[in-house]
Length: 450
Image (cartoon, rainbow, N blue to C red; front, side):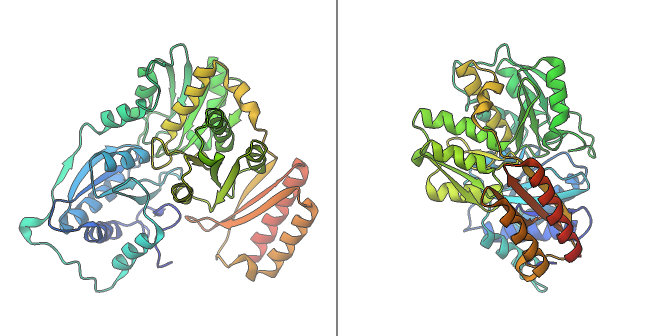
């Protein structure tokens, strides 16, 4: 096991298999509690979770660890990941913790942290926590019995978050007359999301809003936008919104049933911000996975697409450093720094709906701004994660594909931060060639990284 423990988005794995065990979660609470306590004042941590059955295991284990370290624990129950970021800031807490494996199936779970400003912890802070957890003879420096922490349930957490999200939508503007198909992935947004759109005047057609602990992301949500697309056409809706299990990701469907990814949403939002001179430096931040068409789109408008490694945390870090206000990922993580410190699917949906309402144009017309190049993504399961440059056969195949694309496309190979998987991405102007090259690279990787 990698000593880091943490991947690109916190700790993640299959429930009751190392490292996603109650023992590790308890030690995680102890370690983070010790690290984030500073002085004799009261210290608070906010803990939220998605709808996975295993959430109860890790909620209680983490709470025990934090209480044992002397921290005051506020349990908010099932809430979206971005809601925990907001509540951590809103309550002046020292730390926020989310128990979720995002878009993964129910048998997985994960734990990720937000600092007191609502930002995900940097690698070096996660490394400190991991070192404390894995130390054989850790000195936890337990507080005296009278100074251990208490745990409370924060009953008004959903209401606080709903008000916060609605405040990002202009006063005087409503969604009256809009029909929205909303897929909550049987996940963390199932309670709060419908109220937000209904209170703004929309008619909401709900799917993926009956969680049972094991159906999160199960043929629903942002991983299966075709479900929403069919329903949008059937219901003659204005838009379809597909969220993931923890609510930090959004994929949308226009009124014709066409699926739009994060790149296309960013193009619409970036264009609107540039038109009102509200995009500093005309800078958009995204990852290496974003389509070449988005890069060309920004360049043609006198702007720039700044790329980062995969992971919304790295997008946010770059946005902070470059003073950018808009960023995101093709997968649907979208960050609007005017309102939030992390990706928020509901916030992103309202920003898109705001533009639709102000322009009084259907989403299909707005989406013509960006026509993505053909792109093929494949996942290849591997036994070990050797550096690609150490595998001559992979390097040879890569050179072949890049030579054939002739500068009119891209190839990206990367290891997943949470699974034993290689992500293969090929992009170009010829869809048949893109498909052929992606399959070829996947076969070479499968053969030589067994």
